Each structure stands twice: as C-alpha cells, then as structure tokens.
Image 1: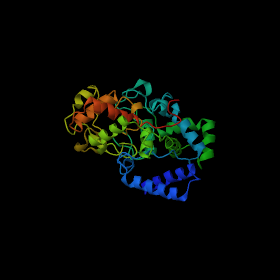
Image 2: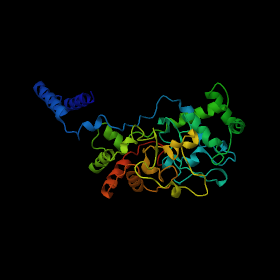
Image 3: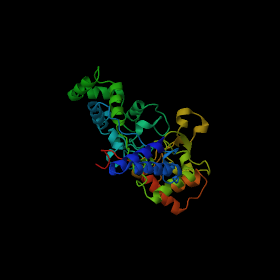
Image 4: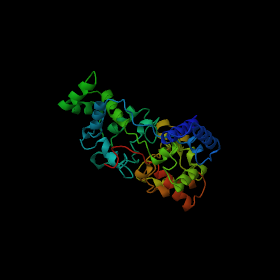
Length: 346
C-alpha cells in the first residue's frame, strides 16, 4: 500500500508538471512508474517497510494551550523544592536536550545524586519512567523528584501550601480546573506540558518516511551497521529504546565496582524496586533520540562520548569488537536521530 501511494504521488506530480501531454504518454508514464515500484532496489524503497525504528509522532495540536503554559510555568517553578532553589528545569534544561550535561544531578543544598538525568524530551512515549522503572505513569514520575531528599526534598502538602499562597497560581488553576490547587492538578498540568515535548522530523525520521536524501550514504551505512551488529535488538521503536530493561555485561562481565563511588551504596537498579536477585544491575535501556545532545551516558553518567558508548556496548553487550571505521558511521546514524522542537537550542 505504501508503495502504491508513493507511485500515485509521483504520477500526480508528473501530471501537474506536464498537464499538456497526451493521454498516451500519461499511460506510458503510469506503466513506467509501476515497473519501478515493483523492481526498485532495496535502497530506494524497502527501507520504509518493516524497520525496527519508527518515526516520532508529531506534537499534539489538540491540547489546551493555556494548560500547556501552566505546566510550563510549573516546570520552571523552584517552589516545588523544599528550599525554593530547584525546579524541574534545573536537571532538564530544554535548550540543551532536556538534560543538565552532568554525570549526576545536583539537588537541594548541593546534594549529589547517583544517577544521570534522562532527557525529558519524548518522555511521554515511555511505558515506565526512571532508570529502575519505578514510576508507572508520566504523572507519577513528577512526584519522584519532589519527594526525593536529594533532589527537591519536599512533599505535596508543602508544595500545595506554597502555590496556594500565590494569587496568580490560584487564578490559573481555578480557570482550568474544577478545584483549586491539588496534587492531581499539578501533575496533570506538568505532564500535559511534557506531552508537547516531542522531537519529530529528525533527518532519520524523514528518511524513514521516504526522503532518501535526508541522510547521506555514510549515515545510511551506520544504520545498516547498527542493525547488523544487533544494536536494534534493544534499541527499537519510536524512542529507539526506552521500552525494556537490561544489564550491562551480557556478553562479557562488566566491572560495576569500578563504576560506582565506593562511598555510596551500590546502585542495583531495578532490584531496589523488585527485590529479585535477577534484577540486580538491571536498568532501563535508554532512548537514543537526541542522543548526541545528552552526554554523558549510562545510568551513572560515566561514559563521556558516543564513540566510547558504542565501543563499550559492542564489547560487553554484543561480544564484538567494533572497528573504528564502523563506530564513526554508527555515530553518524545516532546524530541523525536528533529531532526538532521550539525549545531546543534557544
């Protein structure tokens, strides 16, 4: 069906350009395009079908803009923290990719966390949130940092009290909700804003949609290598990851001792939630969308570059040495996953 639609679009463009040509030529053109559609090389058409990665959907257009603005205001609100110094945007700086660019984030009173802040862009497309999957909804994940003693160190009664003392917030909430300021209304407003933080129209997404000029040959080769090495077994879907949990060290044991601060309790990942030994050191597979913007990498931010990350994944997850020339092309593909959003690069 996709091929037929493409053929019809090509014919329509041809007819618009040659509306004075004979019907005989038009028929010949249709047959010619049909022959191309049937016999085209895989490089031309088949890359659009049955791929492990799908494009990011467009930003929703049916969301109340006033509700989005309230959520955006709350996203930047430091009064969500105990000492009025930390807002969501401190760890999720939209202009640089929805992250803070540090290995681990700094919370209230200069406290240092133990996990890298994932990007807030495209977060609405996840099925579970946080590196250990402890939040089951976009709304639930908002409460995590607020209650975390290292991050914001507050609680809902304190947050509601502060915001309720602000006449502007009271006015905004009464305008948009049946009740005033509540936990559910706060999380709904922020999550509504976060649902607009999608980054469609990356070069690779345009390629998937049929624009074979959107990426160059080396980038296309990088995607082919990404699949042939087996990276797509964990990194697939619209997020190119983000939909499963895995350990580092499937093919070769990974020295977690050297990757953790000896003064901290070892981060066992999903085990802290499930209590099951098989989940020790198991973390959510990260999304690779906009990954060129979100260094450093991995749950503890110990990997500084994409090149290093690709080599490490090849060795410990796939049991393969990836030559430098292949690493370069895979990284070109990863850079082509950077999408567009008005908040980026502002």
